[in-house]
Length: 61
View: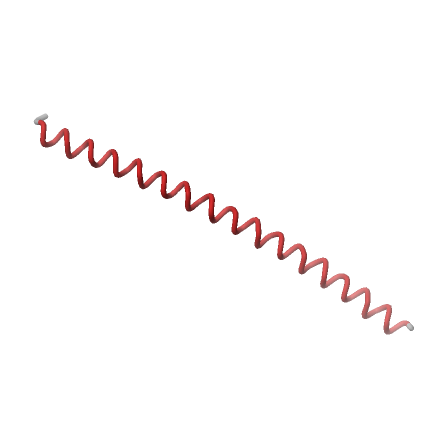
């Protein structure tokens, strides 16, 4: 393998490493956002249950 080919392969390997790092960082961000969405959904579910209970309570008064 000549020096140009070795340099190109080295550059490609470096670029692949950088892309893998970027993908990993994007995964971290997406997982963080997913956890936040799941937390919001849980809060909405609790709020919905609370409203239903309150509505039933008000009807029974």
